Length: 271
Image 1 (tube, one colour):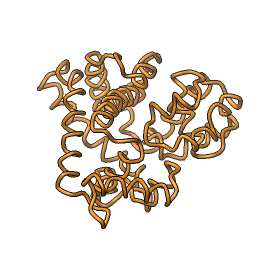
Image 2 (cartoon, helix red, strand yellow):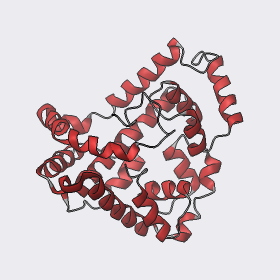
Image 3 (tube, one colour):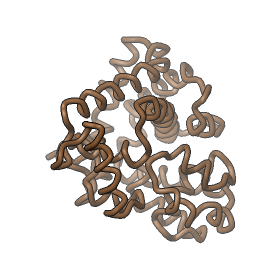
Image 4 (cartoon, one colour):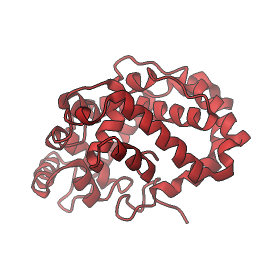
């Protein structure tokens, strides 16, 4: 949600960070401190390093990591109040926050740099922000595991992006290329390599081998991401899913951006 709402752009623009790509790199990397472009490229994985280098480390000259973290939290507060309305102070938010935070107690930071950096941030006091922080931690915990799965599968950043787009459950081709900084030529060259490996067909779709590889990547990611849910337990996990589902549906409005997600993506707006 935080990467699509206008509130974060307003907060970071006030800090002197005006380009959308720089805002993305700054807000997500800030918990790691004033790191260089190599660290951001490694932990974000599917972005063109040249795109990152146009913003990092220059972005830290505009605002300190601490100021960016605080601005992002203010943006999350404003966005959730707008999207959830009166529900922002509901019992459902409080219970969801309690359960999600409990799940986070089962997460560990070993070899998970983005998760570990965000986990070092203090927990917000207000339930809706506690819930948002917990979801961020769970997202980064799984995201770090996903990078392990991708590298284990022998995929580079751009190859990972191309094969995910080919599933029809992620970004559109145009948005993936533009937002991640890959030219059409780079995309075509990487796609040709995937065709040679038997993972893509000539039309750019996944072959049976490509689909099997993507399925194994997701299974690998899930295996490495179960600790929070084991800690929360079956009943707690089911309850969190039940009580938070209406909240998730309300926040889906933030993702209703034309041309970003393929129709098969779970983030595409539902009628």
